[in-house]
Length: 403
Image (cartoon, helix red, strand yellow):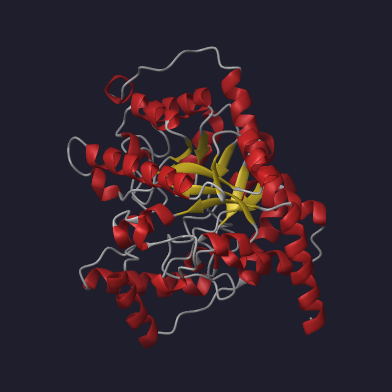
């Protein structure tokens, strides 16, 4: 490709994103704000470029990247659910929700809280970024359907059924199987999410949990930040049989940018980097300044394989082929990963991905579905299922259903 052609694709990408901005399925800025400044927003003014702080996200770069809607992850670590009561995870999730609401309140001309698909469209019409929330891991509800309902009332519009560790009612992709999918209570969680209109997010879960959820759900599901296992054989990615089932379900798989999930050569390197973090007494997902200093020192001694927008595009090509153009989206996982692709370094990078897809012959209509239309449709479909629900709130407990 000539430089002139590449520049033309990039210019066209910006034009397309102005009309059909990105709905990104997963951004961990709330956790990064907790780790860096314990939610002191005076120390991280997102109205200005925060590149020097190590953040991937701020308002100028969201605008530069053509982002029109963001699912902010209200993630908390799974070790917060380790005590018998499990309430630390619930409290921390509430703090995460609070900081998202603080951000919306602090930047009202830039951000709009979105609870529905109509809210997303209204935010776009106003020139604001729709701000939605997703809870990353079923440990955030502490095996309580009432807590699930409370999170929904506070604005959470998806829940990832697990994070990196199993929950008592569902298996994670990166833990040893116990339930071999969903337990009876896990199935009840899915049904209650359908009743509420909360999207069932299957990123992080085991393949058996994916299949069980697709069997039980009456509403479309999402993968908020997962790519194709056939392209990069990592358990966090989606097998082809599950991608193929999305057409019948109506769901959307949102490709992630995390190098260890998209670039086969990065898988082993990341395992060694994680081991180095633990050897230094740090959690392997630590992206605090201290954690990043350890990461950077390891990277200097052991140069990492570099993913690019083309690497991500390889996944999207495959996902489009298997799932269909109506069932794919984007979920970068910015501020939730220590490393990013070379030309997708932060939230300003989405035009580079769109330009890459244009160079591969993706049409304007295909790209509009990828960036905006599919994500809005899937939330609207979940709302439709909730409106048609006839059963009342479930009061089932895990002890009743799973013994």
